[in-house]
Length: 119
Image 1 (cartoon, rainbow, N blue to C red):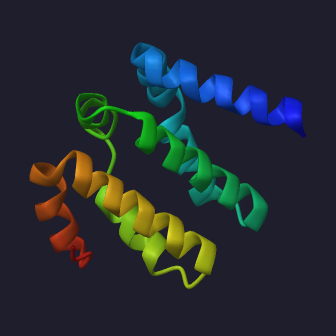
Image 2 (tube, rainbow, N blue to C red):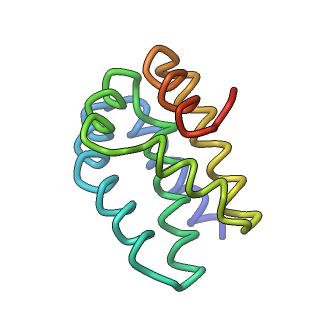
């Protein structure tokens, strides 16, 4: 357990200190995570996808997020998550919406409102 926590702390440190790595990881993973989430019915897999997506959003800078989400219907995805009825999924959707509004309010205020996600 101690070794696992040290490994996680090291990964977090690297992502904070080397944002270009987060940009690369996010670019490779985020769209795939959304696709996997949408195509699987397994609750555990869906929760893992959402958890990793939240981490990508958390560690990304606003500029990275703007680029990362440019080709994704992110506000629609978050609205679908909020309507799911699963507590874990709704909680993650709220976190994603909050991160989006915090980092890119000029982009997501309009898009979230269109989807019925009010801040």
